[in-house]
Length: 250
Image (spheres, rainbow, N blue to C red):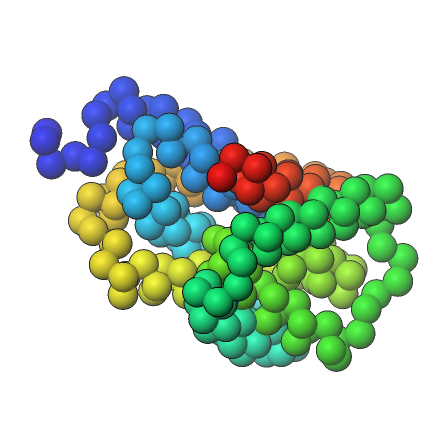
């Protein structure tokens, strides 16, 4: 059994972590990596964890997005997707030209402020215009994904202000997360980080990710749009806090 990427005991713990994390993903269509990456990093180096978790995120986004793709708002996707790709390219370029820690901290503060604001004000009463905010959110999400490994928050902020139907919101967001994570997976592949042990580890854990998505989806069906938006706000707050903590620990 030396060919396995981890032993039975570690595998069982990782399976529990992944299953629980993807319950959140099943509810909100993003956010699992915020829990899987730091938790699994206790057992493996980041060079192993990040590619494995990207494969899990791509698989989860594809499973959720393909099943509920009929609910996705194609008009929003057509505007956001190309600018997300442009943002990803800009993010890779910016990695070597901007002060990384200060940028991460600023992004974290923004997410915390917006998360607190959303929790305080409740369900958005007014929407935002597609132009220029679809362009801005798409670009920022793509850039954030390659810069920080966290691309979904800008998409979630924008789409929560645009889409009143919770099913449409979740389906559209899951498709944007699929695009963002696929870009990262391609970067890892080109960079030579998609080794067989990472792929095998992801394949062993995918059933538990799908189980978590199923449980999260069942919970989401019983929740109101207000509850879904509150969950998204809490996730934004947690992600922002984790980014600030990352800077403080550096």
